[in-house]
Image 1 (cartoon, rainbow, N blue to C red):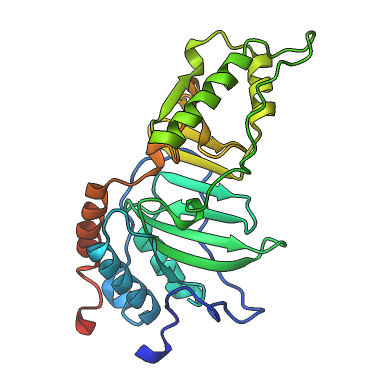
Image 2 (image 1 turned 180 degrees about the vertical axis):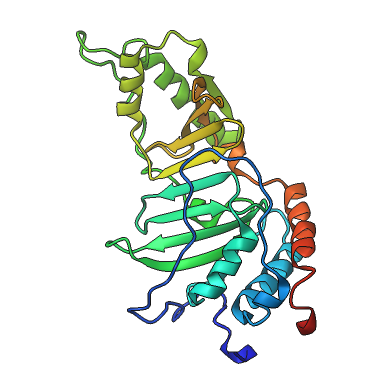
Length: 286
């Protein structure tokens, strides 16, 4: 394959593969996991994989120049064949954060073992993959748009014989802090674990806040589940220990919970680690 034939390019029109091709995509994790370095093949076994080489060259350059505040840097890997894609998957591995979006264009996003490096798959209405992106970003592109329909929180009292009376003050508190956040960016968290919230109260809160399009799972020694609501900047955040026991249940007023955002120093570390991973490969192409 010549350099002109390498099917890695910036996202844009005409970037989709020919119909009918069967491609193998990275699997999305479902269970908790801890960090593990990617398992790499011998250099001579992959020296011919020019598409993966070009993707990694792009990634190294994107990590080297990326700075906080920049929009996500995107490369379209949709045209890679199965062998090149498998090597990219091996190099990147699976990190701690997985994201599912049920928005207008359904998507699944997986952080790699390199913090701030993401893989995102987009699907059509029949769950066929229509896009495969490699991203360098503090948070992936799928989280860039406002999340929620913008409807105000309903703080009215329920019917007198219905559950939820203990939950109404929480909705009032959320509404007040949403105004404060809009005015000055002041974040707020309501720790429901410390409040006398019944199952009926929790159900009432859920019905009033609704479910937004984003579900996030951050895995480590335990897991953190983050669910968007129908109100922009309001999130359910639940932490579980390694035994699967809920240890913290909160509502957060913030654009994105901090656990989803890669730190600047993590991106610098990722740039250095990628260079170490790639050092034995494609030396004759340097």
